[in-house]
Image 1 (cartoon, rainbow, N blue to C red):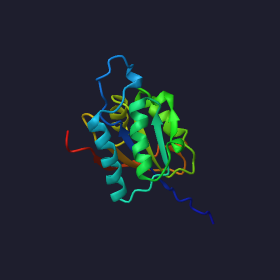
Image 2 (cartoon, rainbow, N blue to C red):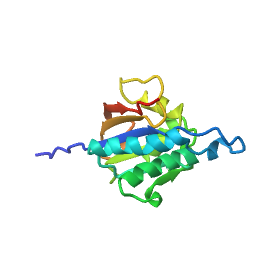
Image 3 (cartoon, rainbow, N blue to C red):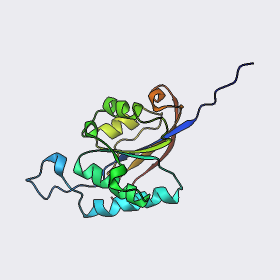
Image 4 (cartoon, one colour):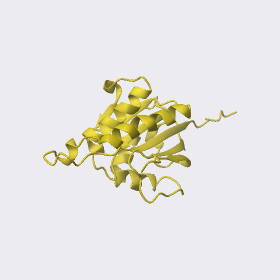
Length: 171
């Protein structure tokens, strides 16, 4: 008699960095900081995830200042230090395909990952995953999906379902 292998669920929270500042024109795009709204929205959205009782096993971020700062706020809400954030330079202005490659290489033991990156990549990536489509991922927006797979390496071809979409309402 064959034993059936039950597929687990992997949960992915795709998060666009919080609102960034254009005040310091001497900074490169990569080095831009969050503005006041971004510093408010990031902890607010992190708190919303906590209120939904979503356990996050890994925070995965672009190394750009605005994305990493946003990830740091979320990690802090989950009582994690910034050094626990998995940092990927390739997520800076990444295409949907590059984001997929990062996801496929996440460690198997991670059940729920929060991934912080940039537009247009995050919008394009989110729109490849389920029939639920968004026009534009707002700053600090969260597009969440569940995938039926045991490893992230199988994510691309796994059956996926839309979980929720949330964003700061003060836009």
